[in-house]
Length: 86
Image (cartoon, rainbow, N blue to C red; front, side):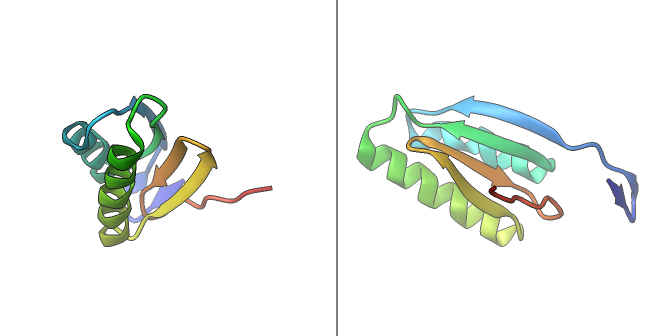
């Protein structure tokens, strides 16, 4: 993908999170323009919701997108990445 700063090669970071404190690494990856595939299978439902809300807020501030991939799997994409479902 061409950007005003040259060629940008998208990267995907896969994370498994159980606690909100572990979500910081996901935000850092998104800030570095990585797509983050987050698996919340091992998180308690209340904690999973807190993590999703936290990351959705961070992605929104960074003009990115959030997509639910599965029951406990979410994709957080930075600005400039188009997420489409077929």
